[in-house]
Image 1 (cartoon, rainbow, N blue to C red):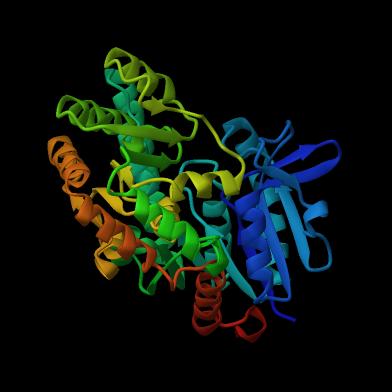
Image 2: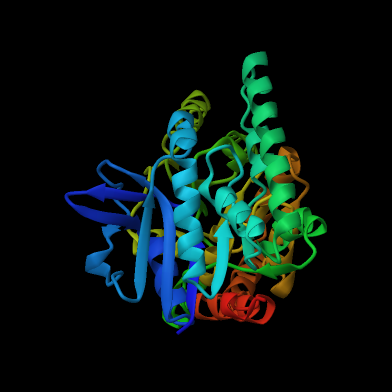
Length: 408
């Protein structure tokens, strides 16, 4: 029996005597189990009521013997981290020695159990992979506020995290790097980097042929519908997003826009919309836990507009293509790879708000081009489904890591 040891980025929640986990992570656990006989999954655990998108693991079939969950204390609380680190290292080593393959997800800041797990594997000669879905050091650098103290704090956290990124990549036998943007940023630090993808949609989640036909039929006459779903965080460029809407409104573009997601920038974005007098055109429904509701939002959009300010590979871009919604936003390697596959969008340089507003206004004016982009989006990313991307990552792990029992 082949056992896979992994660390999780999303936390567990202990509530009413059960462990809960977010839906996407549960989807990932089930996908891994299609390729390994047993999964040992480790993650930070919070003793509090879980968010709406979480479900009890037992009810989802995540139970022994196929799954073993290791709930860990909050390492980001530094007193807890220093008090429990040795104990957690021993638990990691025991679990790794009972596994055939080891792959850990990396955050980077002090208290990240993924970094601890990678260092345990390295010290004990255990072949292991590290997984990155964004460049965390860059995210932390971009999170600094306008004050000197905030900027200094962000710079320190970014520097510490960048060093952790370099150390774990240097020590790992395999680096799994999600998306072209993350790959280009981190591959030079690894001796065995591999470009991989991450998505939790299947072919059956794509927009249906009748729905696509209805969407295309509405393109010529309907007001432009702009959508986005994701955290309202500084790295997502929410204030840029609203500023683009202000500019196209001044150009006379008829549009509606919706951003589904919660976060620390949401109030600032809402205030910016109110100041611009766009409350009737722009809506913020907040966090949407219903996956089907998010897919319907994307399917109803004429374009996904995004203003990502850091190097990451957000799944929402792939999900938009599955919904036949073109990608219009800031250029990076990940977005460019998705757009150029079928020509399903338009990208401008990161931070160029004027160019993005001009591109959106042009599409509002040229409905023939917009319809063509919708059709191209519908043909895009067919190779990116949950089954295919997890099979790909599992094959890479098995081909590049020698099972622990075979290590001399």
